[in-house]
Image (cartoon, rainbow, N blue to C red):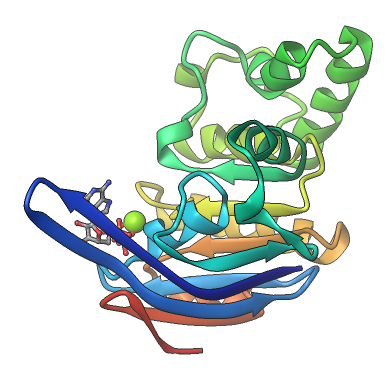
Length: 222
Ligand SMILES: Nc1ncnc2c1ncn2[C@@H]1O[C@H](COP(=O)(O)OP(=O)(O)OP(=O)(O)O)[C@@H](O)[C@H]1O
Ligand SMILES: [Mg+2]
């Protein structure tokens, strides 16, 4: 489903070059739940931004379902992201002034879809993540774990080919973390959702099918 071939990413900050990725290659199969681990600064988020088509690598190739993703124009990439990829990233937090269900249907609303359709699919997906009784709560009226489940619902409502998550349990207590990981596992086993998740907690890897360990911009082992 995903083929990553020799990805490099160098950030240039004035005179300083940071080689965040130094040639990373791996594949992800359809329906696989992949975890990415490694020390802070090892390049995990940078890698996820490249394969999530949110950034352009300095070198290398990325194929998603055989599509040469880096050959797409910016507009094609944006559409591909909207239609086929889901993200649970801290920089895409849910919006504080919208209710749970509004947060989930906002992207569909902006795409101009029909309200009766996106309202129903948003309610269905919130029920799937266990929030059927929290539809009209604002984020501040939800626990941290519940807010994160709204973010997951929003990421998967459009049935993405791949769900990307960057430390989805960061700042959650261990009970809420367990619920989030169990939800990912259920989505993976019951809906065959392909998932690529960064985590730094060793016990989280039990929920995944496979772990890639990053070190200094390279895969240390997998
Ligand atoms: N936008 C950027 N501009 C310049 N340098 C960056 C940028 N983003 C990341 N870096 C640098 O690239 C390296 C890898 O960063 P990255 O965020 O990928 O690490 P990480 O493994 O996700 O770390 P953490 O576990 O702390 O989130 C770091 O040295 C970081 O300082
Ligand atoms: Mg990171």
